[in-house]
Image (tube, rainbow, N blue to C red):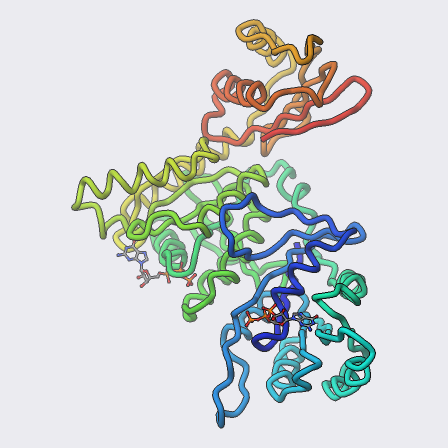
Length: 448
Ligand SMILES: Nc1nc2c(ncn2[C@@H]2O[C@H](COP(=O)(O)OP(=O)(O)OP(=O)(O)O)[C@@H](O)[C@H]2O)c(=O)[nH]1
Ligand SMILES: Nc1nc2c(ncn2[C@@H]2O[C@H](COP(=O)(O)OP(=O)(O)OP(=O)(O)O)[C@@H](O)[C@H]2O)c(=O)[nH]1
């Protein structure tokens, strides 16, 4: 999915605009359940196009007096990592030299740009918008993030200008029946992603080859383990970003989401010395919603393992906070010493094989009958809930369609029961399972 970043000087109204855009009447915004108050991004649909909108509030600090305007590293990075940049200016403070610098930087890296001018609350400010054409763009969009004027125009322009990615839609690339295991290594800055990747690539007897990416600068790396082929997606990005450490949390997390989309299995690294953070849970929530296989690597284990009690506490804490991913194995590991690094690959193979499971329709329905008999579907409002049959239309993730009389009336606790029963009956304990409830007339409801 394309990433759109709102860039601008402090106080121009980036957060206000972010909130406006995501609350606009017609926009469909898919927010993660509230694991964190500090929102990183929203998954926005406008006119049938989807994109990630990155909230970059606070990313730019005030330029110091007397120091020549210069685009800060964070801002450069945000520009680099996005597919389209909205430069937000403030009509009340007028055009600022830093904004010219930002435009130069955006041109240099050839990203599509939209200039929007905020705080145009009335006709008096409208007269002042002309100044911003000095930035050398064809169009400047006046808006008021507070009042909402111009905000839908901006959304229209964003979807007009969104580059069409060459990569195939996610679902297709993953269901292509090749047995290459696409793996993403994700996590917060500094957790050890590049160390982990380097460790993997440097292992004895590991066959490694670089594959030029089809999109932008992404380079995937292919490796072979136990005669199975893995692709580590976006590896170049992981290794390149290793230099810059500060304030990159948001960008790092949004990039992680993008890599998750391209993979079958996400290895999420947690820093053992810090334990899971809100951002980690945020990434985990995304993995869950995308029905990806997942391995939770508790990295930097070497730093805590001598303290047995602490080590135990950390693992318990990870399991508890990630209980919404009950199928994800938790592995203590050290990318520095190599401890358990191969084990991650071994687990990835297991997870992947479960993730690719197909069950024959006959067996599936026999087992389903016995699951229903063990625990009858509860009645709702005195009306019985009846299931007719089940099919598995696809795998990766294993997806089951359950035909029934009233698909909208299924209680989530019964859904959970069914998911758990499917997991244990078909050896899917390490894979997400997707159930889709469908009425005979075609009504659909879904559950994780
Ligand atoms: N008059 C007016 N004020 C606005 C408008 N949009 C935002 N503001 C105000 O501008 C101030 C800064 O808004 P924020 O959204 O916090 O700005 P930001 O760019 O996210 O700021 P940083 O976090 O410093 O990067 C707040 O006091 C807002 O209420 C607008 O359309 N009109
Ligand atoms: N003790 C210890 N240190 C580690 C381990 N893994 C990584 N580190 C150190 O943690 C720091 C960050 O590691 P990186 O691999 O650069 O982390 P990253 O997640 O790629 O960071 P970003 O590029 O900022 O996203 C480096 O100093 C590593 O040497 C580990 O298992 N144990």
